[in-house]
Length: 105
Image (tube, rainbow, N blue to C red; front, top):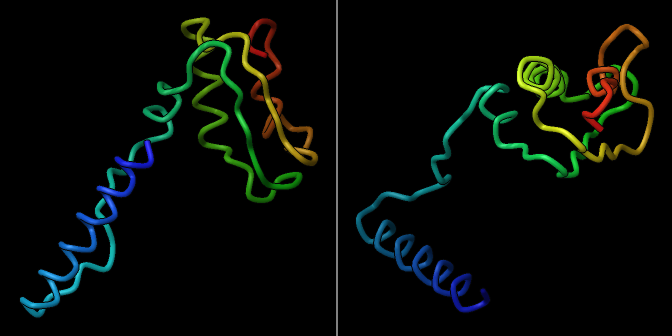
């Protein structure tokens, strides 16, 4: 793994040097943006889901909703472990409430 990582760093450094010679600079790598539903599809049975935020602030509401919707429609993913540091949600069906289904966690 270290060799692959080092190769990637060397390749990126070489590309930056070539960009500098051409007068252009690559500031950021382009990444694919996905919907919450697409991200929810990546979660597999038995995985650990870690969320941040506190009460209703900065919780990944769209992703939590998408995971809940997927579970209700398909029964997947099941057997998840939900890990968070502090209260999630406002006791209104948001936050960790999305995971409150038998078999989901």
